[in-house]
Image (cartoon, each protein chain N blue to C red):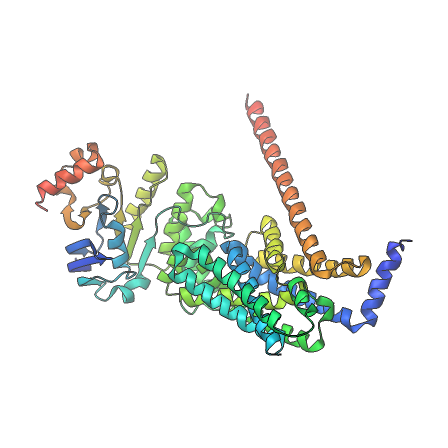
Length: 244
Length: 298
């Protein structure tokens, strides 16, 4: 399988503070990867580097065989939940349509073929019936699916999600992971999560990240133990196993 | 003795047909309503009325300097409004941590410059007061042409960049990911607000600008659910308030700017009360409906 994200000897420093050090990762097409690590460990920084919102201090990073900047239109991104104003007067379909936005989007309306793509994406996340509702009227899980639709509208090859289930209950969480599993048939997925236990039945690889990073195929690590362990202890366990 | 309202109304419309100053005032009211509806919607959606206030008050500096140099005050207002918008935008983008203090500083420094330059200007100063509180009845046809031009500029830019403006207001980071030039769009938004301020100052004065910028849009937000509809609603409301305020000012011999703002404020409060009452009724209906459904199941 082809490599979609290739990271070599990458380091990133923010205000003289080394957030990521000497990272080497190779992510293959149609991987479903969980990224775990403590707060401030560099998970979101890694996503932002892949999106080209940050530039590496050292080392190289290529996405879809080009620079992150050029690959960006083919990357879908679902930001951390709850960052945006929920009372902003947009309908579900308007929020999803934001994924069709580009630098030359002039004039007040999207074209009809853009709306067709928006409706296709909303159908994928099962929100088609709610498309004329206000975004603010949706439940937490529906809102998250709407943001996933926004990321899918432009038909990306890679989907990045930053803690997509941070504030939804367990049924909704399962629902979202099932949706991602379906999407994974065509799209490479990287998902930042705080909860490896839950995610582990969906992902095929896990990236453990705490300034340093290591990637494991899911069979390599003791899932039961990881699921049972609290967050910090399973990080310690992994670090011992892979000699980070 | 108080005249009968019908006669007063007739007087107003008779006067409107007769006197060009009233016609100019009415046109200025419509133009300021359009500008307010458009910019005000963004101000309310993005919750940046404080920035709008900063721009409006900094304009005082431009007015003072224009007076001192004997330039047209609107030129001074226009230059200072754009300058204030760019400075505030730059502060917002670069120093987000102490942004409120810095915007407060721009606000006050603009006022201070204005006061110093007017005190340096010899002679008659009553015009300055009219800029603080509006002089809609003194607008000349030349002013009106400039206002129309500025208004056309606002409408054209807002339509051209509508989607980019709306989505930058909604989610800056994602707009940037989609390749939108977020910072220039943000500065464009502040410049639209600045030009609106220049237009509206003619009608209600710089102290009351921020009210006309926010109240009609906030009222429209209660009943309309898309940025475009809120804009249309806000344009209608602020035009209506401006014209009604003009009528009120003419018939009751009150200051026009204050009358306009009073009406806009009352409209907002009434709408707020009406809106919560409607919501209450709806909730009650839902409860009754739900109870009815459960009892019929039993």
